[in-house]
Length: 513
Image (cartoon, rainbow, N blue to C red; front, side):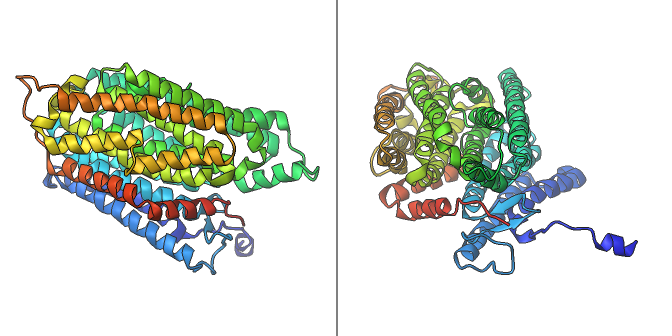
């Protein structure tokens, strides 16, 4: 028996490559255990501090992995040309692309905690449960960014999504929060069904779930060396695009976004707008550019349609909204369109522009919704645009920070948003997609009116006589200050972030065994 058992093949596991995922998920489980055992004996700040410490540890691991990849120090491990590593029997491939997204998600968690801590105390909500779900969701997003297998990617997607469904509905004293949670869950389950059915069809068409193997099979099928059922493959690819389209809020899969953003607790929207969108686009990029790149000409028209529709709907519909969160929700749809513009030009420098845009938009979204969290007041109800009247008089620094973030989203020079839009539009122009370039520039002009409308209300409308004084706590103020510095620093000198995005893109080739 010993000899028989000795012959059992065990999967290769590189635990260091899995460390960021394990630390984030393990931090959530440990926090839940500690809170369950200690209960009220823990200080109020403990859960938030634990989450920040865990996320900072993940960021540290990410930087360590990136440096090791750069110096080619992975010789003892199964590795690829990009210096990445393969683990979990080939189901997880950790390279600079995955590390870029992992660090981004961990940073989003840190900033979300800074925004959420005061909000949770103000609304008397269960802080530890929120932080546990936040870390679990981020761990799912990290898995999506590194998945080398479609089933593993689906598991990451569900871990990310299920936690967010609960977070959206966590404000039990607000019916709008419950309604938003139900809407998000039902539509999310519908999109997951599309995604899972797409996986089944891809498997039926190619006989594999491994992205590297699928890419190789598609390459060989073009020369007759392998057989692929193109009908099943094309339908499966379309269904995967539908599933991803819902997650990144691309038109026509965007219907949930305004209602869910408006009803969800504001700090949860901070994470949804920045973290969930980043994870969704990372997974979309990984699947379509690593596995389906041979059929770029087949899926490019669909991405073109999604990009144009998202730019048009996000820019035009945002103008007529009266609620700040709904305005920013349509803004996020428009930004999804810009990111899709970069993906449409993916064979050139498009994917590097996508990575840059994800980091830039994460900062702008976090800062914008942090301001909304402060302004919303007790009950998180005061999100009408009228609540911003005279903000420049009441809180000039807060109004100034919000103005800068809005101008960055509009693409004004000397902000990171300008370079983000410049990069994706340049990627489209470099590939001679001039129609898409013109549409993206027109959408930028239209969206500028959306952001300037908010600025006018803050600076030119007098505050109401009965407007309560705003209290800006240390946590939200710190988060806003960080993203403002980020916006200005990389708006004036974008090269470091551009270089990181280029490195992540150059390492996009999947890790092979």
